[in-house]
Each structure stands twice: as structure tokens, then as C-alpha cells.
Length: 356
Image (cartoon, rainbow, N blue to C red):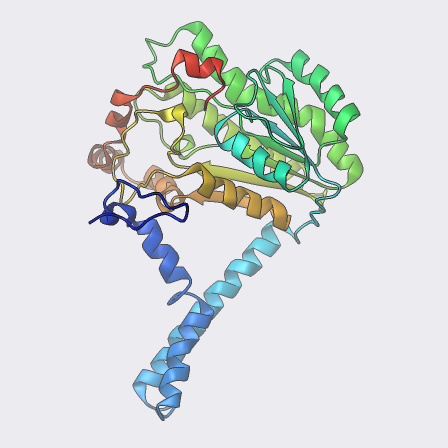
């Protein structure tokens, strides 16, 4: 059975059942049975059917709805206590800087904010794949501090002090430790890790002075687990995740500066082209537009926190608490160590065109 036509009128060649995964099921449940409004519909319906409060179906459903409501409220309270109130996001005054924004996820975010009329600056070694309104391109190797320092002055002079920084730049080589040469290892850490330090050092002081800002760190689920042929990438993303943790602690007393950590699973961009996901049901490949929507929703709301998607990325950290023998068994079952065997990544001509 084919999937129904997409809103644009095109049909997907994927079977309908391939579009069903655990994330979809959980999402449906979270807005129905596990949402306070949905949970309270059952006792109200039973009451309308003249069930009395001492009847087990009615008081049982009330108990369930109460527990769901308490859990929902506890989540809100936890986020408020952890990150404080949201900051005001005024699109007439916001200036965004996106590293690695010439393609892929970064370009998608830049396009949307540019079309919404915000001032956006892209920092990349490659020119954007398309021309976008209100988006300025600054050629810059973000792994080189001197270049970032010089470009940051131009950005501030030409479009203003950035209030939103999205550290998105990343490279992946997909080689074993012995096959990686020195240049590739250095390139990974320059682009994936040091670039975050350089942009934060240049743009955070302006946010502190303006008393508002949002810093988004793009990490990865591989910051929690290192499969074969991902040693440099996984290590760099783990470093970025811990950098973000320290940054969050350091800016905590600046109430209006928010930090957002994004730890996605595999995204369908050329960066990991050829990689075979172990399970499309439990570990579905993410579409860039879905990740971009979640990031932009958090930025627009002025909130802080962590975005972990799809669902399995929220629980993979539990593996570290299991016995090593169980961890190895789970790695074998999941097939994560064999996923990079078919890795192609970006073709050299794609890298010249800035595709990620």
C-alpha cells in the first residue's frame, strides 16, 4: 500500500507502514491518553453516562486523570525551576548567527528566519546553496579563531550584535582510528568543537551587555555512544555536550540568556549519507524540517533546555549504567557498530558546494 499524497501533491515511494514508528505512536498518545485534557475526557464521559463516583470505572478513571495531570504539572515545574522563566523573543530586534549555515539544517533555519524578516548571518567556508532574503553570508573557517574574530567585528558593524547563536558547523569522516590522518582529526575538532569556543567568546559578551540572548549547541546522540568509524565525531560531540553543560552553569545568573542543547539522532542530510539506520521503527531517520521546527519553536518561545529526538535518544544514556556485557549485547542487537560500513558522506564536489 502506498502512502497518501503529500501536501505538495507528490507521492512518496515509501510503504505506508514504513512511516509508522514508535515516535509517532508516542506523539499520538502524548496528545490524547497521556495529556490532561484527553485523560479527563473518560471520567467526564462516564459521568455523563450516569456512573456514580463510587463505581470503579469512574473513580479509577479519575485517579488515572489525576496522575496524568500531576505528571504534566511536575514537568512544567521542573523546567521552570531548572531554567527559569522564558525570555522575550522580539523578532524586530533579534540578530541570528548560524555556523555551518550554507547548507542542510543550518540553511533551512536561516531561510525561515530570513523570510520572517529577521537579520541572519551565516558563517561558513562555502557559499549558501541558494540566495535567501535578509541572510548575509560571511566566508569564515569557524575552526580558526583569527577568522572568527575578524568576521565577528563585521557582523556586529553591519547587522548588529547577535542575540541568537546557533553552533551548527560539523564534519564527519567515517573512518577507523587508524585510517584517520592527522589533518582529518584536527579538522573534526576544529570544526565540531573549537568553533563553539570561538563563537561563544566573540558573541556572548554582547549578549551579556544586552541582557538577552540564546545559544544553541548542536550535539548528537553519538555524544553518548561511540560506534565503529565514529571515534573522532563521537568524541567531538561529547566534548560539545559537556561544553554546553559548563556554559549553561556559567550564564545561569544571567536570567535572560538561554542555552539550548540539541541531541538528534540521524538526520537525512548528506553529512551521514549512506548510513543504514539499525531500526526504522525504534530509530527513525529524522527529516531536517522536523528538527528545524523544534529548534525554532524553542528559540521563538525564549526557552532553554534540551531537545532529544527521536525518542530513543532520551534513553540511550541508560546504557552506561548497565553491565558491560549487556551493553555489548545491545550494541550487537541494534547493529550500531555496523551502520557506518555503508557510509559515503559528502562527495568531494558536494563539500565544495557546501552540502551538509
